[in-house]
Length: 365
Image (cartoon, rainbow, N blue to C red):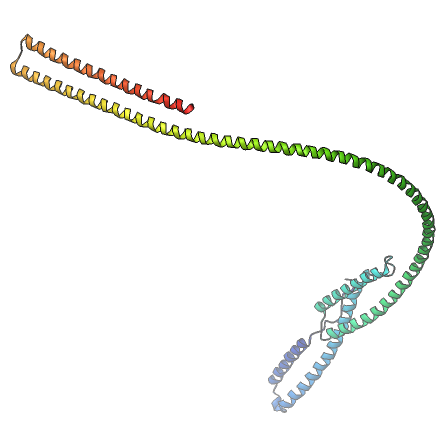
């Protein structure tokens, strides 16, 4: 900001009233300390003090109002001059004076709002509102007259420009009318030439259309024959597909029947196999039982022999030979039972093998 406000700082009414009360209380205290009662009544002094302070307060109010008015006017002038430095002539800013005028009006409104905002924050004293109102009224009236003259100037400038534009447009219109007349004559000539060309083109199109119609009829007849052939082939294909579906269904039924037969044969074979295994296990169990019995008899016999040897001592040669014979017979009987058991196992295995191949052959045939 350029020049700062250097006047006496005004006070608010509340501040003056507070200062008045403070001074009055001090004066009362001073009077109370003086021994005025010896000379006169203190009430008269208090009355005189009250009148004096009220006159001083009213004078101070007047001085403060004057100081507030001067301070706030100076503040408003400085704020407005600072904000208004950047504005020029709105009529000469751009070719479009109305648009520039609108921009200047908007900017002026922004400036006034900014000035009022800063003034509200910085204004002092009781006269700040009245000073602001007077300032706004003066500036608005001055602004209205100023903007009126600017609008009149812009109107005259635009009127002259529009007159020149109208004259130029009329000249261009006359030139365009002459060009249109020439172009119309050219178009009429071109139209006649185009009509003759169109007549020839129509004759050629008529000839080509008849030729195309004959070709289309020939192609349509060929298409009809092809469609009949396609329909006949489709019927044959449908019959072949139906026969093939029937054969497939019969094959599926035959396969289901064969699978059922195979499952039955497999079940019978499994049953026969289990029966053969059961018989084999039974033979093995019988063989083991007989072998166990023989071994137990042999063991018992040997125990008896040992017992006899312990009891009788040595026996003669015939008894030893008899024992040897009995032992040999037992060994032969055990060998015979083993051979018999092996033969039975072989027979069971051959029986199981004889049962399986016919079932497999039946399934594959």
